[in-house]
Amino acid sequence: MLNKLFLLLVLVSATPTCGAAALVHPPSTMERLNKCEENVVDSYSLKPSDDQQWDLHLIDRNKAAELQIYGGRHSYDPEDSFYQRVMWNYFKSSVEIAFFEGEGVFKDGTLIEAIQSGTEPFFLQWLARKSGVPAVSWEMPTDQVFIALTRKFGADEILMFQTLREASFEKNKRAANVEQLNRRTAWYLERNIATMRRLEIQTTIQTMDDLALRLKDLMLGVSWLNVSASWFTPYPSIDGEAELFHDINRFENSLRNRWAFRRVGAELLAGKKVFMIAGGSHIPLQKPAFECLFDQIDKMNSTASNSLGR
Image (tube, rainbow, N blue to C red; front, top):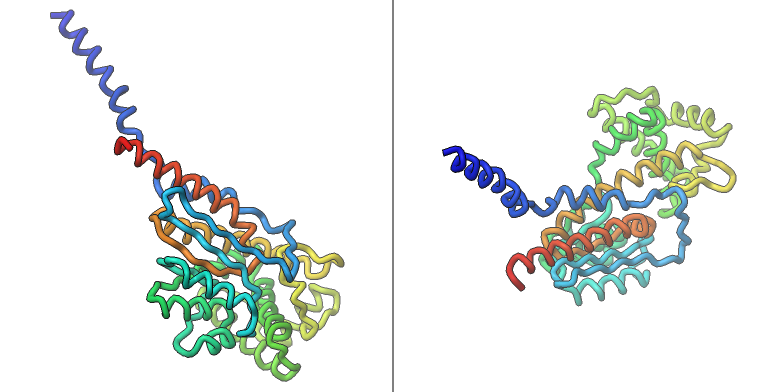
């Protein structure tokens, strides 16, 4: 009797060991994303030149999941060679989902109208609509960005940063004159204050005069009308100007790049063919993470093939 009990115990104790080996699960989508997200590069040391072209094309060994990213310059010129090159590559590809930068939605119009009103994001939405493919923003939602930034840097500082960055865009990309710059920046300020109020974020800046005074304190008497595109980069300027804004941009860039990687990466792990447009500087920062993910996809496919006896 004792011998039988001993034998039974041996068999029972051996079963979990064999079963555990058989029940080892491959990494989940979340685990694969977590593993590769850590490869997103910090933007502090990156300083791309204006004429640098950043593109990325990855495809898994089974030719199922595919990623094409094209780095734009946010040009309003329909004759910009970027648009011709990207359109050619888009329509010769079997795109299943398109990811654009920003949260703006192109409602309707011609290709030229799309570019002139919304640069690359509206351009890609136009292409996706023509091909019957879903177009999705890869952006972290604005509300979440506001909350994360204000927790780290303070409400007034983020209100100045967001408003003046948009003023810089109007001045340097849209060539706004002084009257236009004043009017549009005041509108951006009101919109950003309304966003903060809705999110129950308190700020002492309520008018353009308030903003101007705070900026002069921050940047030694600098007028906001002299707003420069160089203030809003993730890397520091040579003269040390706008150091706080560079720090904010760097942190925001990291948030957005990691969010984009996870959003796009989930589609790639599902075996989708993805077409994406982003500002050029985003791409080298995300590249190592996407390369890691395609390595994971190849391992996942290899494991699946082996389990089927192929």
